[in-house]
Image (tube, one colour):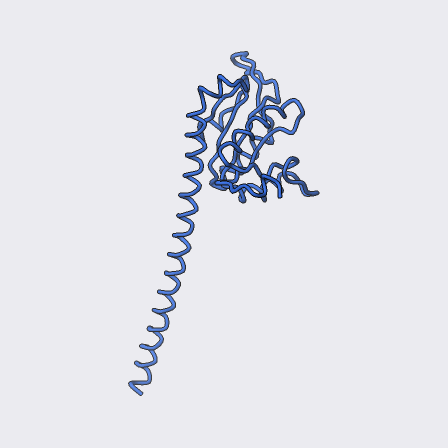
Length: 197
């Protein structure tokens, strides 16, 4: 068994990231952070998961198996605001799609942004994000915030799982009560129609 097979993870994170060679160091850096906090990176289409299916279909299948989603935001496109003329470096459209799928599946979203990357408008409206430059001093300064963000995602996941369990218990209890009332109602109806005999 390898170290990863023996290791007990506290959570599983679908990692949404670029597969481009130039983005690999940042993605590896983020995954090292996740592993340091005992979070298993999973699900990335083309990295941890492969199928002859449409990649979006595979994303929709893999994201529900994760406790939360981690976005590794690296620049893909040069963008220019037509009104202000401001130039920025935007994310891949697939990162936006995976973020949307995560949001639609009520998964907490944690975002790590490579310095100089514009995350757009959607991400800041659903979560906070941390910008990193890959330097140890930067990590040391942001380590408490990284911990707080990952811990919050973990606690949200735990809370959602507990609510789902409670909901299942209540649903089952509700069904038992309905069946009990139906049986009692049937008994009373038969008693009314046919009398005491």
